Amino acid sequence: MAISNGKNVPVITSKQLDKARDKFIRLRGRPSIYNADVASEIAVRMAEGETLTSICQDVRMPCVATVYDWEGQLPAFAEAIARARQESGHALVDKAMDITDDLTGSKTLTEVRIGEVRAKIRLEVAKARNRGYYGDNIQVNQHVITETMSDRIKRLTGNPVIIPAEFDHVVDESDS
Image (cartoon, rainbow, N blue to C red; front, side):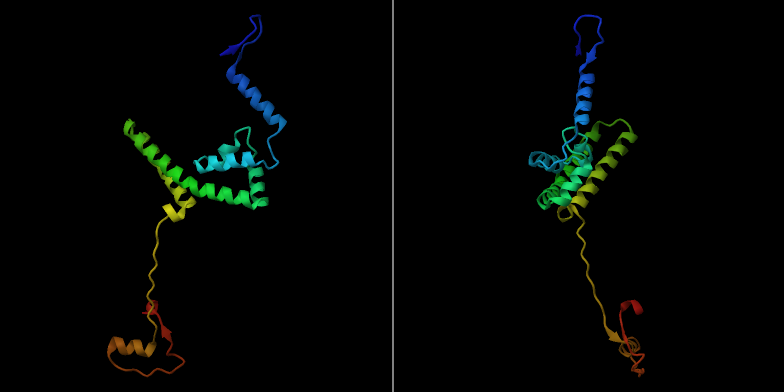
């Protein structure tokens, strides 16, 4: 859509008008003073899987440095952002599933590979943001044998050996 007064005046498209409005807002300045409504919108958008960088590209939002300042100065806001990042893991898994579902219409191997990489990155970020839900479950079983050197030699050879006390130390499995 173009705006014109019917005379010999340059035509301004709606895209140019939007760009001029955004520039005006930027010149006027982004919000830097904490605002609960803006903070809430940031947290909600992050929980929905949007990155802080993309949120802060919105001219109505503060810059990334301001958000980090708010996190450092306001514990309640920092907690809300941490919770939003954790919750964003669910949204990222959903997005990864959408990406893989969309691969059925891919025509080339390159399109499939790109989709796989995009989905995999989202899954890895989901793991990092919500380890308790999406992280790898690692179980460590540790079995340590503690026996003296003379006891080990006796056990392995069946012959008792007398070793001076200063050399007869406790050994673990890695020493054998």
